[in-house]
Length: 396
Image (cartoon, rainbow, N blue to C red; front, side, top):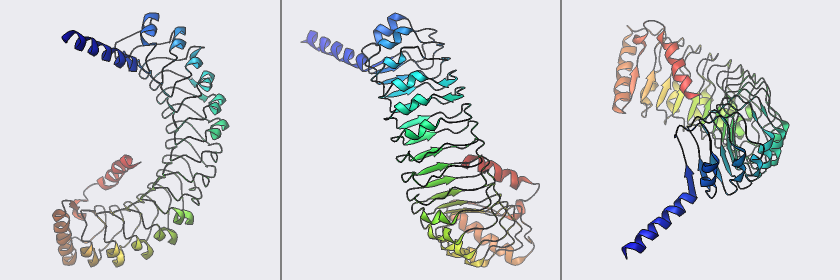
């Protein structure tokens, strides 16, 4: 009986081995023909974290592989017959020395996911249009200055991450009707194509570009999060009212001077970041956002907080540091959910008995809710601006 158990466990090991072949972090400098033979029946092949500079031509023999991880090596090109890996669904070539997404990729028509972040890629081959099953394309942190127009034919794409590149413009994306996440932050983009056809889009990341406007949001009924911080945007489009599921709108470090009344229709909004803009007043319609939990209007030119701010019953975080507030409304006491309020860097009269009493009440309230009160008296030096910036970088 023992023998057959032993044989059975051996058999199981073999099945496991065929499932996955891994030589991750084995300090390999080359893949020998023997290693290719050993991996030939595996569905998952992992050579990540070695010191490989190239792949052998025999790599084309891995004709059962569905998932291939070559990340964290020093590979700069794929062998000529790489296109023979016709069953490949997932390819990870991140953190290597590739300078392009090569033509050969276009032969891998079963591909559903390509991770190629952290290379030196300057171009994507037009053959990418053949990858009609592709769902995720991640080329974050490369050196792309343009995207091929053929990218618009990837109709099944759900995630496109082209952040941290050198793009000045973006081609037509109206064919990407299944796209749920679009990451374009940290580029040099001055304008965007229309995004109104991208009805499935849930997450749009446009921070750290040179945009002067936000694209029309008509049709963006599924958008849950949009970040446009660190641009040159002067206004929020009235079409924001089309975003019926929007939770987070982050637009710090822009040139926004006023808000459209339509923002009050976005009742799902829980986080609104407008720090480091040109706001001189908060309009009363802003206080109709009854689910708003975080309001960040730090480092603007606000002279007052209107008393109706107390209508924001869900508010837990209020950041108003670095403004021109001379006094605070007594109604702040009514914000029963408040956990954090930051008032540093405002010219509030610290000797005023009303301020002293209100600050005491707010401190008790925040601490009772497990949070923190930062009053105006902490305004030594110009730390508030720096603090606001540091906090903001995390939120991009």
